[in-house]
Image: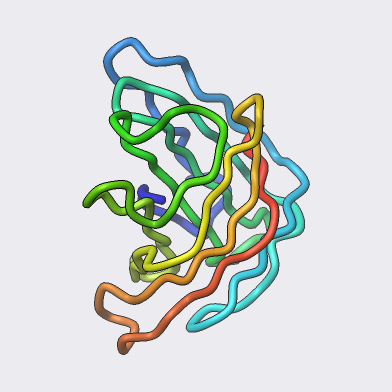
Length: 149
């Protein structure tokens, strides 16, 4: 999970393909993601986008409620990405992802799994993330089902 987040829906960026990748599409999709920790809440409907590029498989899910800071981003490095399946927080030394919330606080995946379903437009996650600073060493737990297309 790796991209900057913004609570404003109008400022939600779409992942950009690099090196001849497929163009990402963004939309609002049903979600079922629970976030617990420094920020807590549930994303039941949200913006989502994902793209497979020469850099890997990446995207985001963001709560569509106005002013909500709930968002997670993901990126699986191209060397580690082998298509639909289950991934751990580290594939080699590469972090699976980081969560960006209000104020640009960041959390990095420490344990758990991130699953990409066949079709590469959704999946599930159960991840424990720890703060990279600015949140007092707090943790975030993400669980549920996500969609990006």
